[in-house]
Length: 335
Image (cartoon, rainbow, N blue to C red):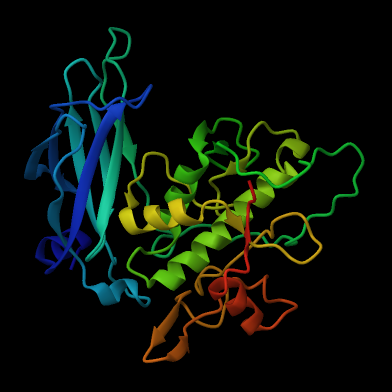
C-alpha cells in the first residue's frame, strides 16, 4: 500500500494549525485563504481554511498513522504528509508540501508571505523533506566532544552565550551555492528537533534529545567552529556535519513548549567551559544499542530504551547521565 493510500485510510488523528504572517516584521495576515490536500494528490482538496485577525487558522483534525509506528522502526511512514496552497491579496502565493502530522499531537505550520511585485509575482514552493529517522541521510562524521583551544589566532567567545540568531548554511560547508538563513536560535532548535525526533515520544525523551541538540549548537557558537575555517555561517543543515534543518518546515507544539522552557541550558563537564558537542545515535545510520532514544518511567520502574547521548557517557557511567537529565544538573545560562 502506498503512503498516500495509507494516509487516506489512517484512523488515528492529529491536528494542524497554520499561522500566516508577513516575511518582514512578522505581521499577521488576515483573510489568507488556504487549500489543504494530501501531499502527492494536491488536486483533491480536503479542507479550505482562512486566517483570523491574528493570522491563524482554527486547528483542523487530520488522519495520522498509528502511534506505534513512531515508537519503533517500521516499514510504514509514521506521520501523514499534507500540502497547503496559501493566497492573500498583495502577497506572492506560496505552496508548502510535506507538512507532517503525528497522532495526538498538534503540528504548527508558520507561513511567511512576501509582498507580490511585478518583477516577482510567481508562486513560492517549499518542500519539507523526510524526518531523519525515516528518510535516508548521511551519517554524522564523528568529532571530539570537546574542541581544542590551543591554535593561535582562533576566535573563541569569552563565555557561553545564547545567541539571538544563528546563520544556517543549507548544505555541506563547501557548497558555496547553498543558501544561508538567519534563524532565531529558539526557532532553529524547534526546527531541528521536529526534523530529527518524533513529537509522540515521552516528555523525558524529548527533553534529552533537545538538550543534546542545544549543547551541540552552542558548542558550534562558542568555538566559532565554521568562522575559524573561513566560513560566514554558524552551522550547516547537513547531517554529516551538524543537524538536519529544513527551511520553512512545520514544528510541533509540545516540542516548541519544551524548547521555550529549556532554551538557556546545555551540557558541560566539570572545569570545561565549552558546551559538549553532543553527538547522539538513532540506531540506523549510527550504531547504538537500541533504536528509540527515550526513557520510559512506568509504575516506578525505569525502562531503558536507549542511551541517547553516546559521547556524554564515554567516560562516565549511565547513572551520571540520568542525574544530569533528571536532577537539573545540566548547565543553565546565568543572567
